[in-house]
Amino acid sequence: PLIYMGDELGLTNDYSYQEDPLRSDDSRWLQRPLMDWQKAAQRTDVSTIPGRIFQALQQMVTARQRCYMLHAEAHTEPVWLHNDKLFGLLRRSPRGRLLLVANVTPEHQIITGTRLSELEFGGQIRDELSGHSYEGWRDIHLAPYEFMWLTTAV
Picture 1: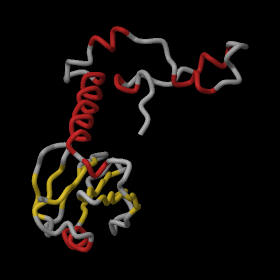
Picture 2 (picture 1 turned 90 degrees about the vertical axis):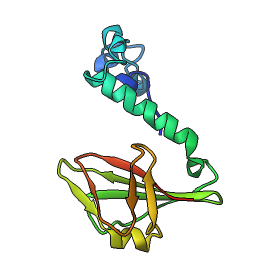
Picture 3 (picture 1 turned 180 degrees about the vertical axis):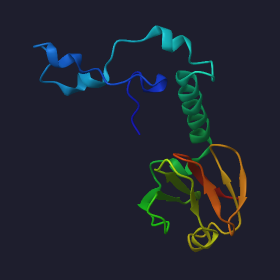
Picture 4 (picture 1 turned 45 degrees about the vertical axis):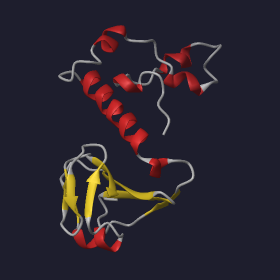
């Protein structure tokens, strides 16, 4: 994924570039807002939106460093999770597998233990983002907009 300047703080798109004749034909300026230094100062305070976004990205960076299944060598394929409200990607590499599950709705959703077992995630599995462990034959409940990076125990 690509992170544009300001995404780590929750800055929004800057449409003012359209009013500048030198930039109006170049939509790259949409993701180049002026830096909001007040929001940048909030990045370490998890009680703020910039703080929660920044800390979540830090967790993803840390998890990414552990997850060799996210290396470019891994084969990626979308997988059907038997639930229209869940998005799934399976990453396979010689060194392991990772199942990305994302709830793309404002409601709680379930990925069934049956489907996890069919995808060969039927034993002890771990969410690399939260550190929580699950039994793969049991249903996993996802909160609104929650996502997980599931790996099998080695």
